[in-house]
Length: 379
Image 1 (cartoon, one colour):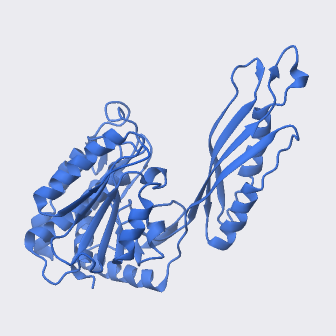
Image 2 (spheres, rainbow, N blue to C red; image 1 turned 60 degrees about the vertical axis):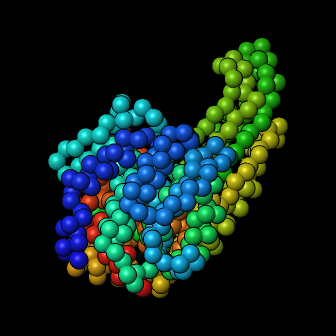
Image 3 (cartoon, helix red, strand yellow; image 1 turned 90 degrees about the vertical axis):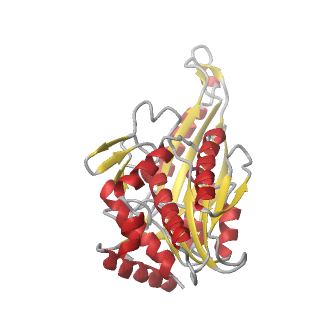
């Protein structure tokens, strides 16, 4: 194992490859940009000798890519490695506020932590196994999706299909809080609230108007007040819009809402409260759509056993592996009920989704080696 890691996982080489992926910007909402990233991974996978299935995108999203080990039967249970190639950063971020750069142990760039770094080290582990031969190992299928950052609307069915033929799922989201992996996640709900009021001239006929913006402001206070750190429910009104001009009482206003819930019992009640919102002003109307986007998952005995396996391997490699439950959602939320799932197996870093996004260079070889050892030893 030590020789394999030394032969295939050189820090500078891994970082150079990650840079080549980071420099292909791939925001979720730009399918052409995402597909340039898919083209790159497909070419790298073909060169490595992996099997390739490219799944065309739809509904304004990019393609998905399933690469597979050359060993194993088509329906043989195996290991599903789950990654995404889309990022939250717009094209131009690389040339603007977040250029690729290395400062000591930190490498910066759009999507470098969430999650091109993790996707690359998992791909490098599979490539190492293909190169050395892998008699007797479980088949490995590495799925790269293009829409995770918006809730995986077009990839969820593919993810669940692949999880149903997996004995284990390894998700390459970034590590948390000093390298911890994730063994439980909150569920995620998303909603859109639309308010309709009555327009009027704000100067001469203000009394005739019913402001949708005013109504929305009251609803925002009600929604944010649902946050309860004691139960684990958080509600965030993250995007608002409304009105047409300063001198017109607003007829329309809207908000997009994110909710995180710890379990189905609490989550169902909280979701029902949002869907049952009533207008404060009887002359305004509300339209509320949405619901649970990603189910939560708890640390089952099977997930704990998989974690204990990973922790033992990490100790052999030379680092201590700890786990946690996080409020952030991932595609692991879809798989945990279908197969034992470890999440947060990607690179260690910080400040994902910001213009300070970075990975810790020193985490690359140990984390790649852990993924390799899981692929080698899971049965």
